Length: 264
Image (cartoon, rainbow, N blue to C red; front, side, top):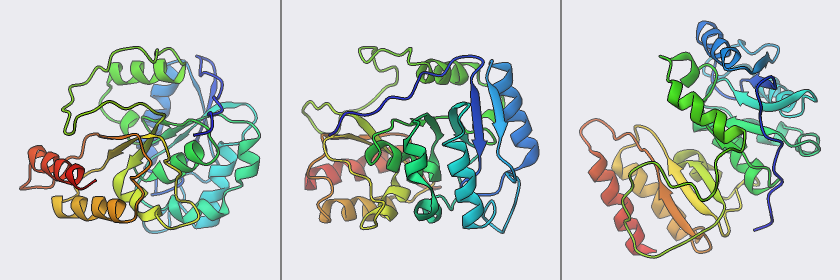
């Protein structure tokens, strides 16, 4: 894989552009999240029309694409943070001005549906992104000082590659692997397969997460990855939190991944 182009680290006092590329944004939640960013020492700058709503989208495709291009190219911003996920980010991929964005890389932060944007940045433009808190989602909930502190350390580049992994994990298949960490929401990434915006995961450690997906759907998505040959050239898979559907357990999901590993 080509070496990534690292954005400048994020420091206190830096501007963070807030944009809505997917679902509609709750104004009260956004205000709480923006206040938390400000209290942490950052300077949030909110895109125009961020509260626009058209059904399950934060405005039409042109509006959301314009917001995204603005946030990811604003000269004074050192980072761009999505307000929330939901649905709609993949629809605007053809309408984003990627050339303009590539001229001045900055850290882009989000997860869930925003995976569509983050994966293109990290694997096609080689601009690292951060799967982290969103302004009108995580940051709007009950304060979690540890999470915000972890985000600040990651964004500032203060985490060493040699720092031990701080979360418990189970190895489902033996061996050792290394590579650039890339990935995101399993269902979003699966929907990008075969499109012009399919991420290039050659040589990466592919991390996957999702929420409330039943085991049979996870199985079906993993089967698509296996049968399409997309997993042949990755270094390894890291499965994160999957939040099991009602009536299923994390052990059920673990078994789905273990069985998929045996088919590789």
